[in-house]
Image 1 (spheres, rainbow, N blue to C red):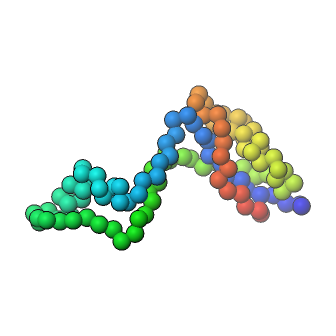
Image 2 (cartoon, rainbow, N blue to C red; image 1 turned 90 degrees about the horizontal axis):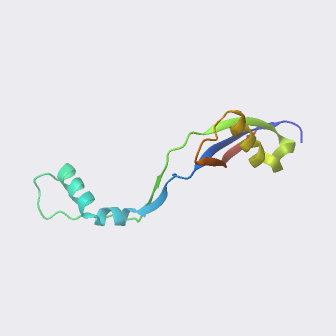
Image 3 (cartoon, one colour; image 1 turned 30 degrees about the horizontal axis):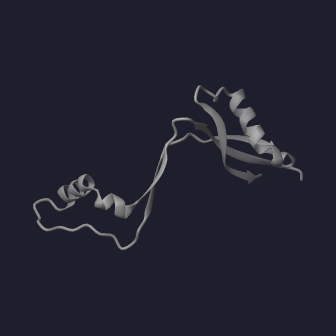
Length: 107
């Protein structure tokens, strides 16, 4: 396995947020419904909000994606190499100690 691959990762921190909310839950919230009605149906009465599909909306911390190159033969060690890259570039800060692999692509 000669060659290299481009590896993408992001830092994991203690304060990261990840939540899934359905569109139905959002539309049933009084404050959200009132805001939508006042923005898109101003002055109209007896307006109902509904959806044909239940879509899941993800609420998560926006993260910066970092990249590095590794040999294909090092595939089994990608997490360790990503952690090494993070330490080398001083990306590990208080409360941020882990890495999550996002993608890898052979070159």
